[in-house]
Image (tube, rainbow, N blue to C red; front, side, top):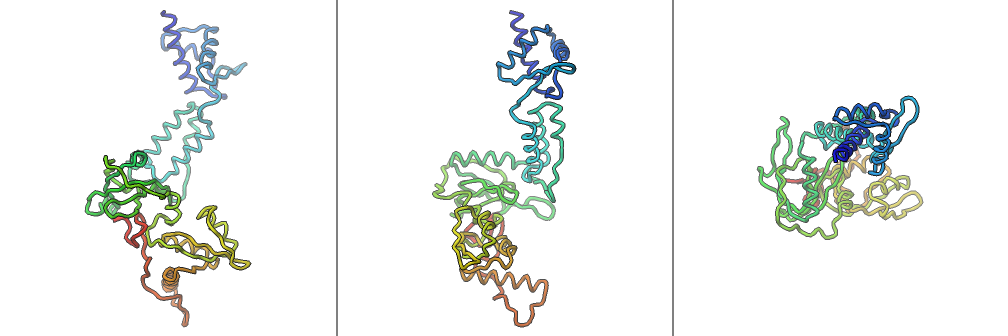
Length: 358
């Protein structure tokens, strides 16, 4: 009985030793194994170690052997290859929505998935240009809580804030609770957004998760989302800004077909318009980032309809021109002033122009 008990104690010790300290370049010798077992008050003869290695293989560990000088046993294939762990570490380090503290904690856990020798290669820094980590430590847990609410189709309540110039939280609606049926989480512009049905405003809205506080899952069943999809919602909202929804008809040069497909997907309809152009009718929310995207395409794109959107884009171009130059005599880009869709903001509704999430 004592021999059987010792045998059961040996396998976990040897397994831990191999997983934590061995790889192909650093096998564990028979002597090292015997010394480790002696630390635990156990002994092992040469033949019994071979039997132990075979038993570990039967339990699912990929125990390999290396002959000759400096030989021994090591773990071959692991659940995660070193290249896969490096990729995960890079993703964690470069993720904006994770605080530095949470990033460091996750990387330490990832290091535990390989041996100490390979873990040293994971201790690296990925430089991401102008990357600023979030200040909100709770976002990591908020995302998990929101996934649970979406899966259960339950309403949630929360408070929503922004930061002032002193880096202090200022709660909107004087700190009163929002009530929302969550439809889906969207990753856009380096941030998580929650989209859903605002039960107080009776409209679709979205909110940045790192600005949500005191999230509570209620016992109330949520509003059905119908045909709503996260992909469609994200495509319409450039930079997740609010604004006025419309079908925007645009005329592009043929060379920009790939740009349009990349932004709106393979299903977007491109209608030939002469030999050098095509038109597209796009369901979008008119906002500053949308105009910025079109402005970046230069003379390769033209806004055709609706009329109010054409006038708004002209007014924007006029304002930009006047900011840096005095418009030459006779040049008029269009009427200045606000148009129906002007002034969209982040964190907001798809149906209330310029208000955002308030």
